[in-house]
Each structure stands twice: as C-alpha cells, then as structure tokens.
Amino acid sequence: MLNSQVEYDTIIPNNVSLSSDKRVLKALERWHPGYIDWWKDLGPVGFQESLVYLRTAINVDRDGWATFDYVKMPDYRWGILLAPQKENRIIPFGDHKGEPAWQEVPGEYRSMLRRLIVIQGDTEPASIEQQRFLGSTAPSLYDMRNLFQVNVEEGRHLWAMVYLLQKYFGSDGREEANELLKRQSGSEDAPRMLGAFNESTPDWLSFFMFTAFTDRDGKMQLEALAQSGFDPLSRTCRFMLTEEAHHMFVGENGVRRVIKKTCETMQKAGITDPFDINRIRELGVIDLPTIQKKINLHYSLSLDLFGSEISTNAANTYTASVKGRFWETKIKDDHMLKNDTYPILEFDNGKILRKDASALLSLNMRLRDDYTKDTAVSMKRWNRTIEEYQIKFEMSLPFEGFNRKIGTFMNANISPSGDVLSQETWEKDKNKFLPTNDDNIFIESLMLPETEPGKYAGWIAAPDMGIDNQPGDFEYVKIHDA
Ligand SMILES: [Fe+2]
Ligand SMILES: [Fe+2]
View 1 (tube, rainbow, N blue to C red):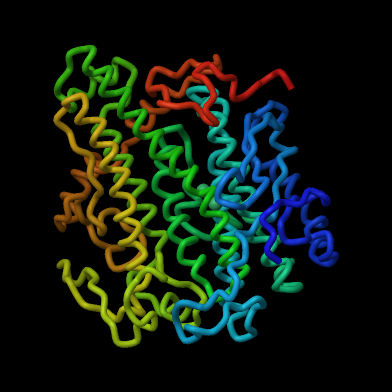
View 2: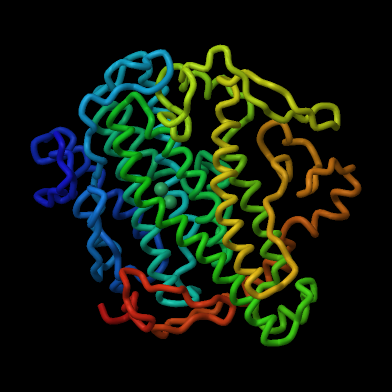
C-alpha cells in the first residue's frame, strides 16, 4: 500500500484504503458522531457556522499536499493520512535494530505502544479545549484563521491516533479512543494527562507562546516516534510533522509580530528604555520585559513535558525499538547506547552538579536538549527584530532548572539566570521572573477583537505575507456570510 493520493469515497478521507477495511471503517464511523459532539461542545466557541479559509490535505506527497477553501469547521474533512510507506524500512535503533519495521504490533510491546499513542493522542484535543475561547478576541481575521487551522489540525491529529488505536489495539484500543473524548483540559475529575495541557490559554500572547513552545515539544515527541519500529506509527507521525510546522510558524511569527509592534511603537514615541514599562503600556503595546516573563513561563512549562531527566521508561521504549531519538538515523553511534553516557545536571543538597549519566536513562534529557537547540532559532529571530529597532534588550531562554515541577529541579528555587535562591529571595523576586496577575490583566485588557479584513489590533504588527499568497485585505473568515 503506497498510496499518496487521498481517497474521498468514505465519510473519512484517507490514504489507508479504509473502504476495503470494513472493520476499522465501521469503528471509526461509530466514533465519528461522538467526535463531532465533542467538537461542538468543547471546540471553538462561536464561529462554527462561519466560513473559514482552511487548508485540507489532498495528497501526502511533499509538494501540493493541501488545497485552500472556505469551510465551516464542523464540515472539515478530518482524515486518516499516513506518510507513504518506505519500502523495506529497517528499524534504526534498539534491540531490534536492523530488523524489518513491524507492520503489526509485537505482542510484547503492545501496552507500551498503546500508552505512548494514548499520551500523544490526549494532547491533541487538549490544546483545542485550551484555546476554545480565543476566536472572539482575535486581533485580525488572519490570526483567527490561523487559530482555527491549528485547531482543526489538532483535531486531525486526534483522528490519527484514534485510527492507530482502532486498527491495531482491538477492544482496549476502542475504549481508549472513547476515553480521549471524555477527559477534559483543566477538569478536576478527569483532567488531560500532562500538566501543560491543563493550563488555560487566556489571551493571544499565551496562544502564540503555546504554539511556539508547547507545539514544539509536540514536534520533538513526533520526531522521536517517527523513528519507531512500529511502521504505522512512524508514518502517521511523519505526516503530522508537516502540519506541526505550520503551528510553530504561527507561534514564532505571532510572538515576533508582537515584539515588532512594541519596538515600532516605542521608536515612534521616542522611548529608548525598554523598562519604561508604564509609558510603553500606555501606548497600548506589550513591553518587552513582560514578553520575556511569558517566555520564562511557557518554556519552563514545556520542559516539564519531557519528563524526568533520568527515566527507565525512556530507556525501555528505546531499547524496545519503540521510541527513538530526534533524527536518530543521522546520529553516528551504535544506536544501542548500552555503554554510553550523557551529561546531565542534578540538583543535590542545594547545589547544581554536572554528571555523566547512562545515555539510555537520560534519553528524555537528550530530547529536551534537542528541543532547546530548536527553540534557540526562534529566539534569534525575535532578537533580530529588537535589534532592527536598536533597542537595548535581549530575549533569552531561562535556565533549565527555573520554575520546574518535574525532574531533579522540582523543589529548587532557581532564577532564570541559574542562581540558586533562598525561599525568601524567590518569594521576593518571582514577580520579576514570571507574569504577575497585573501583567495578565494588562495583556487581557488589550484583547479587543479586530474583524475588518486587513486590519490588526493595536498591539500586533501585520504579517509580512498572507496565507496561500492572499493579499493583505483578504477575508480569511467570513463570520456571518455562511
Ligand atoms: Fe498536534
Ligand atoms: Fe500542533
């Protein structure tokens, strides 16, 4: 099965020949109404009847995989799309290195694989739930469209994981698929599985930070799963990554446009001191130190998603050839790691120690380091924008031990620059590190909708280019025209 063309002959577009796989087709058709109900109840609030200029995948090949058209979100064609099967793919790491990739789930790794798929699946609807109130405060139709594009694609990612559960995991897979629609972000009784996915996304700067930092964690997890010996999982993740790239573009560019508008406004007003916060805020833009605090918050929350620095779970999934490393096939080592070490930091007795740990046990840490390197590219672009306006301020990523809830630093008080602080100093200074209530109230006060085509709210610059090469005043969402 080497389909790249997507079939539209069933209610669920797909390139996995669903029409000849009656059992799975039926299971998905049975799951579909519950999904639509969930989308209407916990998906975007309002705009469900609006026409949104969305891309839909028609082909999973590298070029021309998407078409753009006006769609009502509940009518979006959520589909099952896997990257084309690579012929004779060989497992690149772990105990099964060199064996042909598995087309079925090996019995011994069944529960391990199911758990990984469920955790990944759980994050997809969670982010939609977190972002559901943002439509009504969108700073432009362009941004509103991007939000909804991210939302429908996260919905598709849920479909992707549900397909794997339904096809390969029998009745417990079906049960897990149903549970994915029952947990809810921020819920007391049935929260989503990972911490950062239970935080709220109350404003658009938070949304841009989330897509810049947390979606990038998603990218790293998908890259690691794309190496999996279980070929259907690998192919699923490879296609998801093409969509994920757009989400991070939305985040990185969103933050950059906020920074740009702030700098531009400061320059026009003749303000050179980035810490002249009150004057800057009076101009209706978000001061750079507050943006830095948002970076501190979202980066540290996202680091927690990688789990503990030392993890037997991570070692086991690697040894089982189930979850690999970022760009595994490009790394030059034995891809077994049994005797290798990896440098990590440990917080012990109030001190930060550098240690060489077992490479297998520190795979979470390694993936996190790769994430940090990836994130640094965004930081560079943001700083270049600040430089263009000759403002003396540099955004930076906080130290890895700052504000952590998971891992070796979970009980430590450490500043963004990496100094170990007493409880007293932490309490005194934490408002300089993390957004305060006042900061959040100020940001929320700017969240006034702008729905005229081509116009942007006062706190954010227009993008350099439109989506799908559309002109600046393109009507990306026809709010009432439907
Ligand atoms: Fe996703
Ligand atoms: Fe995403």
